[in-house]
Length: 169
Length: 272
Image (cartoon, rainbow over all chains, first blue to last red; front, side, top):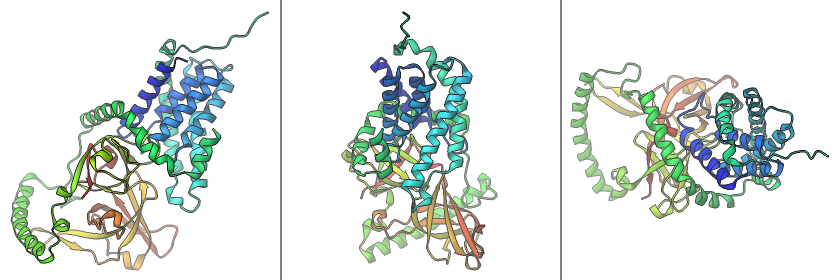
């Protein structure tokens, strides 16, 4: 993966997330644009760069939220592991792939956020993020996935992803 | 990954310092995005006019002009009274105009996660520090956290789990037709943030609550916490007073922010 392209993608995705999220909420929940950027990286990059790239995106998102540091970094790491395991089985350009992967990834993130709430705020239930809010966010992110990922897939060449090829003897 | 998981579970405060400094890096892209988002939001859904004096039935312009004239007269009287009180207490800074104690700060964005916070484009170099109250003309916005050199974050007062002590006041039309403010004789309560601009007060005895606090009363910050600087300022309006479903004999008070705090373009930090 070209580092500079990755950084520009991260920068724009995070900027859009903090800049636009207040104005594009549905049911009080914004879409997770950074997760879509992470999915794009996980779908196309080889294993190690994909893991590192997603973890990095999560870490940067953690820096720009009131939440505890590490929640998104950990979530996106898990998401990357899941997407990488399905990389060879799915057709990366297909909108249905984008829909299903975005939904699964968003559900994984939501589960981790809920578990984090249960663990970190054992004695303060009022501090926990509501499940309905996460559900709205999941649906919203899933619906946006085919559009955002289609645009990003068109720009794939800029990122110089190196896919592994099997050696035929 | 393991470190991230441990950090998330134990939430070390040491990372907040780093977060305060590093979030500055995103100002060049967050600021134009936020400005563009706000501009397009205003174009697509212009802000609705609000009439605090008559929330159920917004009044026409003639009536408002008449009330304005009455209020101007009242302000003259109240200002004179205030000056007299200032001399008596010799505490000018507390009774002075609140805006003179505030530093205006531009908002550069929101929260990238599920929490409710605002990203401010000023930091310690502008005199900001952790814990300072943040206000807007329509009410209390929240408290500063993660203050860096040139950026800071405000945890919104309505963020989930945020607790403040509030009291209530009411605006009513008197016999002379002018609007008067009166204190609601009900004990101070702890309001807990619910997210999405809402706060909730629960477990109040229903027989005491019923008919005492009413919808459209104002909830006023009345917290003894020194970090709030003994500030008395509007938190929001009471949107509902109803029996609590999961606790028989108790009632709850729902409070709503008067403006959408996540969409503010500029806030005032109480620095003095």
